[in-house]
Amino acid sequence: MNELMEKWLPNISWSEVWTATQETLIMTVISIVFVFILGLLLALLLFLTRDQSNIFIKLINWVSVAFVNIFRSIPFIILIVLLMPFTKTIMGTVIGTAGAFPALIISAAPFYARLVEIAFVEIDKGVIEASRAMGASQWTIIRKVLLPEAMPAIISGLTVTTISLIGYTAMAGVIGAGGLGNMAYFTGFQRSQNDVTFVTTVIILILVFIIQFIGDKITTKLDKR
Image (cartoon, rainbow, N blue to C red; front, side, top):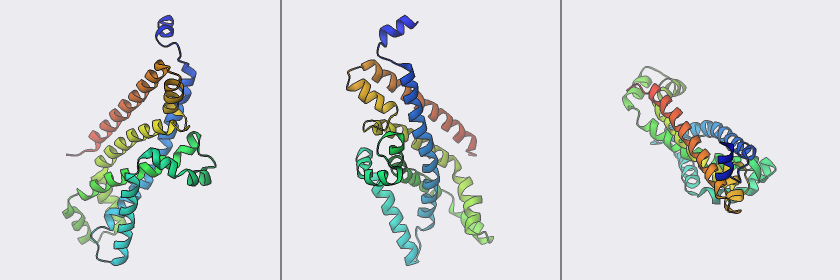
């Protein structure tokens, strides 16, 4: 078996592959935690300030919508470059896994926020109005109505966003963020070591399939329909 692997994968250093996989997982897991929190808060802000008559609330909604639309529209590789001064200021570096976090979070949070906002909009308005008629506070409606009713879509959106983040980490690797993308580009592509590119691609696909499987299972379990 070892001889066969050495024959077909002569340039593979499995210790380096494991290190790159760990870096990709670290970037993805830490980023998705922040994306989940920030995206959920932003989605609530978008939903609760929509269709309001108060000029101040309208202004908040307009700023929130503008933020989401702008950062959803900027290609990730360009966003990394644009955020380099900001990244350098808060992280102290623009390379390595630490240097990738600001761009990963800022690019994915608005995307996730929009998915969650759509989930909130699709909730039966009658349920929300009934809760208000019973004297429920805004916080109670959020905690008892919005979040439970939208939870399957929230988890489904989180799954999609996590998979997108894995793709973003691969792109971040091209500019030195580490991880499987870094290995695929610098070791595999630039050195013409196709076996390295192949193995890193397969590992990324495996990670995506695992995340999708787990996300689908959780979503199915939470869906009461």
